[in-house]
Length: 124
Image (cartoon, rainbow, N blue to C red; front, side, top):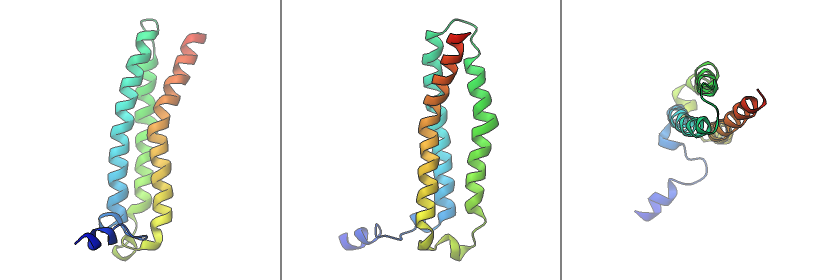
């Protein structure tokens, strides 16, 4: 039994058997993490800025106008696969690269946006 469990982690293993579903799940979780970080970082930044700041509105516009469509495009890159391709272990490096970039954006962009908006607000 332990050997079977270890075998699932072997190189080339497709998460849950389908790259399409795995990327779709990653996109959904990344959007949740991004949104949570954006809310907490923005709310923390608002406390430091003058009342009437445009920071929350700019953050929301970025979320809706840029991030959601970008994540959707990322997900669509994997939707076109047929069933055989969706289970092809040869796609693992491409999947991992896309997964890394997705999570880099989801975790890094809220910090970058908050810093940018705070810098703009302080200059104004």
